[in-house]
Every structure is written in C-alpha cells, then in structure tokens.
Image (cartoon, rainbow, N blue to C red; front, side, top):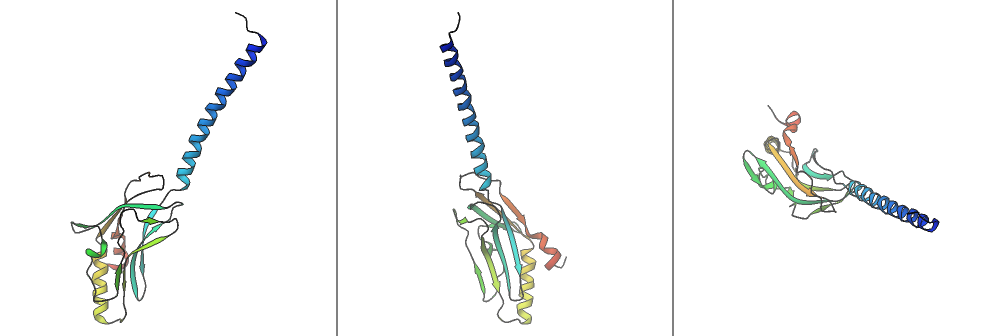
Length: 170
C-alpha cells in the first residue's frame, strides 16, 4: 500500500504530536522534582550560651517550611516529647516551647525549645547552671518532619554530646 502525500503529512503530524506530548510529560516530571527540592526543609539544633542565658533552638536552614510531625528527647533511657521535662529546673527564669504536631517553622526561622535565664549570678546559680549543662550533654533529640508537599524525611537526630567539649568535665 502506497501512502499519499496527505497521509504522509497526517502521519508526520501525529508523530510530532505524540513526541510533543511525551516531552511535556517529561518536563512536568522535572518541574515537580525541582519544586519539591526547592522547598526542602533542613533542621538543626542551635545551642546559645550567653552570660545571662542558655537556650536550645530548633532552626530551619532549608528553603521551605518544615512541618513537625513528632519530637522526642532521650536522657539516660528516659524519653519524653518535651525537653524541659528531662532537665533539672532552676528556681526561676526558665521558659520552654512545646513543639506540637503540625507546628510549622518557616525557612530561615527558628523556634526556641528551651531557655534558662540567670537574673542574679550567684555561686548557687553557677553550680546549678553547670549541673544543667552536664545534663544537657547527655540528651539525644529526634525530630520527625515533612515538607509542604507532605513528603516525610528521615528523622533528624542530634546527640548533644558534642557539648562535652565546651561544658562538661569528662
């Protein structure tokens, strides 16, 4: 069977249309991958130690918002969802934030998880602050989070034992 010029043109146009459709689907897949990667959260813990305060912050260093699914902190075999429940409490000047389910931390933003301020620097305050820092050196934190596309990432775990170099007497 011989193709007529009109049939050849129609067949060529169909081929080009199918090829264009395939390229469009590929481009859509690449755009979706780019969008997901461009809004990726990146959590890390930041410890502040000033003259009159000591705090633990959760920072989102990614390019997209981080949605907290779950948090837990472990100290000497005990696990709790709130850091302040594991740490020794000073008399006054301590504050905490509860990282609840679906808490959103924007890109480049931070949430203060726990803070201790020292209003009167006495010998007793310094002794208790040292005890607090020794305890914090043994804490392990785990954050389970996802991005705005509901993509779950592996849990971010941070062992605070790195603080031993700065604060602990081992």
